[in-house]
Structure formats: structure tokens, C-alpha cells
Length: 314
Image (tube, rainbow, N blue to C red):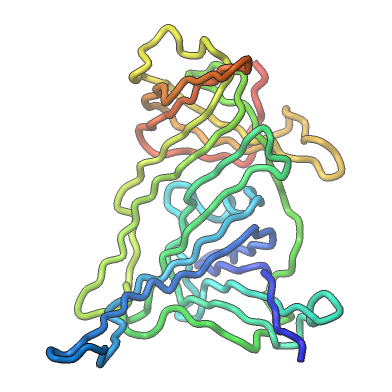
């Protein structure tokens, strides 16, 4: 008897506007977040009962398709997954075929993890010079229940991947490391950039609920970090922190069957903090190698994103 095995498949986030089809996923992880309370009666040594006291389910995922993710999920507000009470977060696996590739999409032997609704926010975006596969963005979904007691997350079998509205795998975009500007000036020698979007989300329980009914962004505390080999970067200012002015990190769009889209084309990505504080995190050198300085930027206000940026060259 052949062993049953599964692999990933595109996911869907349904919203009050257009659906977000995640055709270019890298990975996703489902965490039911169940808190189990067990009771051992006085005088006994074994459990007598187990109860799910509460559950805070989450789905995390990552993708290199920055265009689709940031085109549908705001860096400031995220996106509310909602579909009028039906499942609005649909993450899927497809069954592998013995002595083949995958079972036909319409076989209805595939599986999924479906959630009624929730809040989806970008978590981190990272890119480095040596990453040949390009930039990656990770996101998190805080799953909510309609009434606090109905299971908001289900593991479904018999899924038909040919059903209407189900996306199929496809390439859409990928982006590579671009320049960083601080106060309108290029910082040369950038080797890596990481952006934490800093959404602090709360999903409180009330009225005896088992599952949260709401998820809200309480605060935003984004950070931008980057590493440069330019040893005199920021040398005239305090290492402990100083005003940065505007800080922008650019991602250069990769060209299909080529290298990069022309820098002057308005097809690239930028993430910008209008102002903030930047400081040295560390400066290091080893043996006869090049020294590097790592900086972090603590922005004031919200980050701004653009999917139609032109990459500066000076």
C-alpha cells in the first residue's frame, strides 16, 4: 500500500475587496494555539479530565512574490480576511501521486486548513546581496471566531483543487537587494536589509469565549536594519543615535529570462520611513576581511510603501 504524502499549494485570502491569491508561497505553518487544562483530583495521580481552556489560532506564511503580498496586504493596516461568514483564509496541500507527481486537481483527495476570518499583517521583509532567490516577506494571520465558541479553524479533507476560485501555482514577481538612502543620500556598500513592520496585535477573550472574536493593531513599532561596508557611514554623528531624516530601502525587480528591470522604470519597491533615529548596532572586522557596520532605524510615524518606485543611482 502506497504511503499518502502531500505538498504545498497556493492559498487564498478573501477580503471585502479582491481576493488575494498567494500563488508563489515559500512556506506556511498552522498553529491552533490551544491551551489545554488537565485536572487531577485530590488523592489521585492520574488526569481525570482535559479541557481546551482557550485557543489563539494563527497562520504564518512567507513568499518571494513581494508584489502580490504588499499589493494586497498593507504595511500599516494589514488586511481583514472576511467573506460574509464563510471561510476567508484557505491554505491548501495537494496530494502526491505514487510513481508520478501529483494527483489530479479534481481528484478531491487534497486537504486544507480553512479559517473563518482574521487579521493578516506583514511581519518581516529581508533581502541580502547573496540571496540569489531574492527578497522574502513573512506574514501572520490572527484568526478570529464568529461567536467565540464556534471553531474558527478547520482541517478539511476531500478538497477539490479544481474548484472555481482556487488559484494554481504561477510565477508573478521577485525582487532583489537595492540601495538604501538616508536623508536623501545613498549609503554605499549595502549587503543586507531587514524590515520589521512591528504590528503589535491583541486578540482578547471576553464573556467566557474560547476563541477571540476580534483582532486589532494596538501599536506599530517598525524598524529598519541594514549592513554596509562603507566604514565612514555616519562617522560625523553620534554612534548612540541621531536624526535620520527620511530613510528608504529599495528592492529591484528581477527580469524574467534576464537580470533586472531597468532602474529608471517605475516597477520597483520602496519602503520609506519619513523620519526617525538611526544608530550603530555594531561595527566588526575579522582577519583581512572588510569591516562592516550594522545600523538600525527607529522610525517616527508609519512606514510608506510603493510598488512603482524608481531606483535612485545618485
